[in-house]
Image 1 (tube, rainbow, N blue to C red):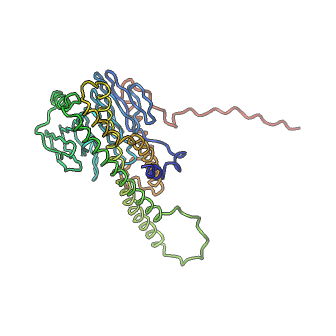
Image 2 (cartoon, rainbow, N blue to C red):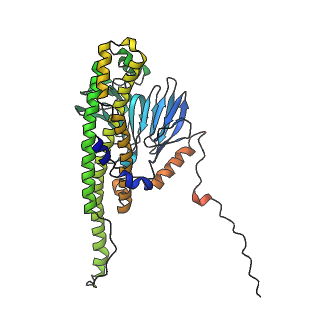
Image 3 (cartoon, rainbow, N blue to C red):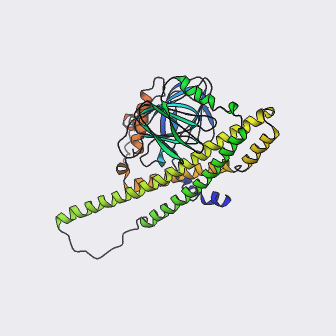
Length: 417
C-alpha cells in the first residue's frame, strides 16, 4: 500500500500550483433545522441560503435538518433529515454532469433531462449506483448499506457488481451487500415508505453486528483492490494519450512546398482538423470514463469506511450491548482496513489532480462542445442566474461590463523652458 500511495500521486505534485480546484456545482436554496457543509479540506460551516456548493463538499443534516439545493443544470436536490450526502466533482464526468454520493440518509431529486448516451445524473451508495435519465425520484441508504430507489417520473437503472435493475415510473428497487438490485413493487412518496425502510436497517436493530462488519470489511478490501486496478488502467491509458499527442514543438523552417489549389487550401486542412478533433474527443471521452470509474471506486471506499466507523462508534459508546466475542470480531476486522482513511484522502487528492489534467487537455484541443461539456465561464453564469432566483441569497457578482470605468486624472502639460 505504501508503494501505491507514492505512485498514486503521479499527477498531484506537478499540478498542485496550477490547480484551480473543484467547480461550483450548485447553490443552497432552502435550509430547515440544523445542517452543515463539510468543505473539501475538512472544515465545517453552517449551511446558509445562497451558499455555493463545490465538488467534493458534503452536506450533513441533523434530525430536524433539511436542505434544498439547485444544481448548475437546474436539477433540484433535497437532502432529508439525518443524512450525509456528498456533491461529486463533475470535472471527472465525460460531459461534466453532476452526481451525488449518499453515505447514509434519504434524498429527493428532480433531474433535468439531457440528450446523449450518458446518464443525466447519478446517485451513488455503498452498495449500488442509480443512473438517472431525466426523472423525479427518491433514494435512501440505511446504516447497513442497503439502498432503496423509487421513481416518481421517468426511469432509472440500479447497478452493482451483482447485477442491474431497470425502474420505470411508479416502481422501486433495493440492493445490498452481495445482493443484486431487486424490484420491491410500487413506489410511494409517503414518508413512512422511506422511514420504515431506514428503521428496519438501523444499526440498533442488528442482532448480529459482527456479521455486518465482516460484510463491510470485505467490501472495503474488494473496493481497495478495484481502486488500485482502475487507477493503474487510467495512468497507463493517459500515458499512451500523451505519447500520441506530444506537446507541440516550435515549427522548424522548411523548404517551400508546392502550392495547393485554392479549393484544397480551404477544404483539406478544415476536414483534417475536424477529423482529428473528433478522434481526440473520443480518446478523451474514454479517459474521462476511466477517471469516473476511479472516482466511483474511491467513493465506495469512503462510504463503506464511514459505515464501518459508525459500528466502531456504537461499540465504543455502548460496550455493554456487545459480548466479548462480538467486540473481538469487530476489532479484528477493523484492523484489516486501518489504512483506508489515509488511502481515501490520498485518492481524493489524486483525482483532483486528474481532473485538472483532463480539463487542460479539453481546452488544449478545443473539444468541450464535442464532448457536450459546459465551459467554465458558462457554468459560472448559470450559477449566478441561480443565485439571483433564490430569495435571500447573496447578490450575484456584477458582470465585468457593469463595473464603472476608472476616471483618470488629467495629465499636466509640461512647461516649456
